[in-house]
Amino acid sequence: MTRATTTARRTVTLQQRPAARVRRRRLPVWAQSLALLVVLLAVWEAFSGRLVDPFYLPAPSAIADALAESAVAGTLWANLWTTVQETAIGFLIGALAALVAGIVFGRSPRVAAVLDPFLVALNATPRVALAPLFVVWFGIGFLSKVILVITMVFFIVFYNTFQGVRSVDATYLRVATVMGASQRQIFRTVILPAATPLIVLGLKLSIPFALIGAVIGEFIASSAGLGYQIKLASNTYDTAGTMAGIFVLMVVAVLIDLVLNRIARRVLFWQPESTERTTNTL
Image (cartoon, rainbow, N blue to C red):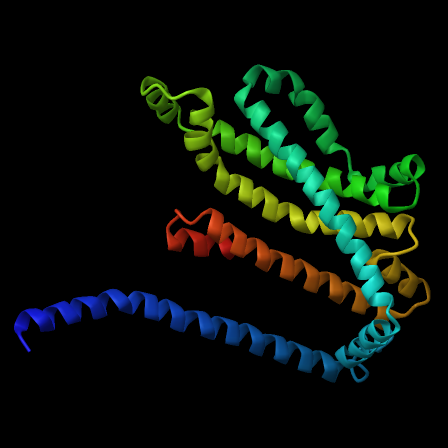
């Protein structure tokens, strides 16, 4: 084996080491998280019924029993499907409207300046206070929950999109104009790529609020949904059933976040890996 061949192999090995170290680090992080979860559940199980009254803090085993009971009865799946539908439809409509409005306002400073006081006033209005009005206006059915979700999602995505469009370096816009690019080309090749990280962040931040909006609407007036199931359990002082519904909401939020992280990695493929990892840990 020549010296040149040995040097080349060492160079390839050194280049592969950072990636290998990253793969080795990821597994311990997941393992540590899983170990921490197991420890917390074990401590919780030990304290409930011994140091803490299970009426106030039911054991994880009791919560699992309540969850299994509702799953076998079929009420869990029906209520979960209702909440997921309300969240998904409201999120899609609210996010799409916010993207369009954010881009239009970001490209039209005068329009943004004229309408800014109205947007600030609307954003300052607590959506929880509007929920009873939505029930009066649109009934206790599906529509009132979807509209509440839209209001929860819109302003988060709108302001992130608006800020992303407005934060594009003017030098890039001037260079593209000098090179003869049309407004459509400037938007597609300069503005949209620069604004995409903030847009993706706004979409990720709005998902939990969309879920919260659907559940709040179900709390106030509904005949189906996870919020309705949690409210029904709390009205009968069934703390295990209440926490079982809350646990399902937590799982749904985590799963949606995992899906959005994968989508974000594909959309933001041009970002450095270190930046991507930092963003995913927020």
